Length: 252
Ligand code: COA
Figure (spheres, rainbow, N blue to C red):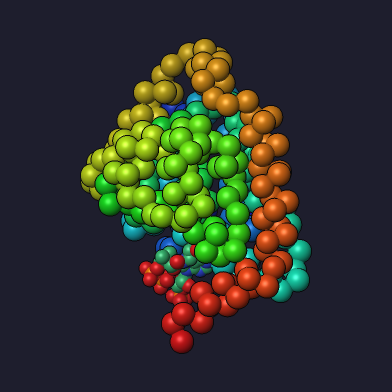
């Protein structure tokens, strides 16, 4: 466990399972420990009957800058990849309770693709959704290659995931990637109001309705696995190592 992820139960009856990135000095970059902590928090929330909804948040300026580049570098240099990312993504793709997210600022890499699993995402208009996978010699992950075209069509999905063109919060709302934009001051109140709204509903009917409007979770997990095989191979490529080294050396 790590305090780089904060977990709390919010709401009058503790029905809101809040998972918050809390590594602001690194723009909330996600380490393997952080993935493990989030997977456990989701699983704990799923089995706790008092929890009705999961909420994912960041800190001012950053939801998350994505996977920790040092961890990418370690794998590129021959280290083991581990299952933490896959375990987290599987947990996220298979939860039965709704997930609400709030973005104020950077949402890079998995910081963008997480929201494709969420049910309501609020973001500030100037937030930055960016998946520079190909620039890092990597490929789309988190089931995004299946989920993004379904919500925004091929061209916007290609622009985001393959061309690596950043979307503002406004762009993301227009594309259907997120529910709506709100001002920075209103962001967390809007997230918690939506969470209270859902927490008050009959949970079984909500869970069934949610499952009916979402893609088949087995297909999503299968795509996460397929993407993961390409991702793992690319992580070990010379072009990926060069991209990670360029990031590390950019301030020198
Ligand atoms: N992994 C590890 N550290 C990261 C990080 C990441 N994904 N993103 C940011 N950081 C660290 C920086 O190294 C820096 O640390 P330092 O102060 O010890 O040097 C700190 O967070 C602040 O980042 P900085 O680059 O100085 O801030 P910025 O506002 O100029 O740029 C980003 C922010 C997010 C645009 C830039 O850091 C970036 O491009 N990060 C990589 C994002 C990425 O490619 N993620 C993987 C996607 S698959």
